Image 1 (cartoon, rainbow, N blue to C red):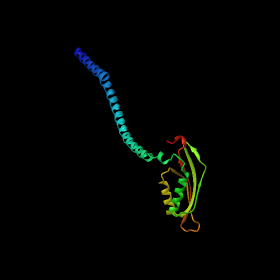
Image 2 (cartoon, helix red, strand yellow; image 1 turned 180 degrees about the horizontal axis):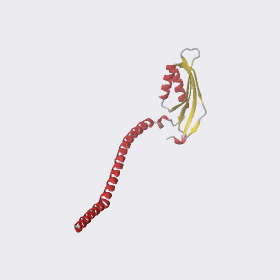
Image 3 (cartoon, rainbow, N blue to C red; image 1 turned 60 degrees about the horizontal axis):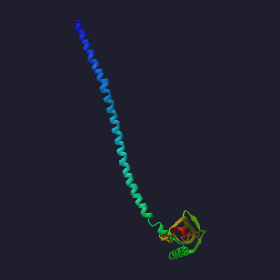
Image 4 (tube, helix red, strand yellow; image 1 turned 60 degrees about the vertical axis):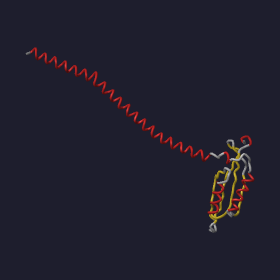
Length: 181
């Protein structure tokens, strides 16, 4: 009986060692590998989702780029190769007259060279109704020449006649002789 008890104890110890060896040398390494694969799968899923969102953003950026390209497509065409300052002043005076603006003053400033462009600041003053002034400004922006409005000041008439005084500073551009082509 003692021999049989020892035999059962040896079998139990052997079975316990086999189970312990299986757990230590097979189950735990496989479990760690499964967790590593799951982490890698999660990381790849996140990368795929991020790439999908960036693809949508890239498409939006492409659309913005196309829009901006069409906006600046005629940029050089709107910057004449010669000064033509007198023609511009005549166009402004004609626009003011067309919109029945009174007390017209157009005073050009000193020519300035800036980053491969020449520019001339022009101070303008006139008086009319708000609708007349607004239409004048809209049509001035539609001229076939690049005009940047730097400052606009509208002042209500002190007599409350419904007229406003417009004082604005614009800058017109033209390409210097070295860039004409």
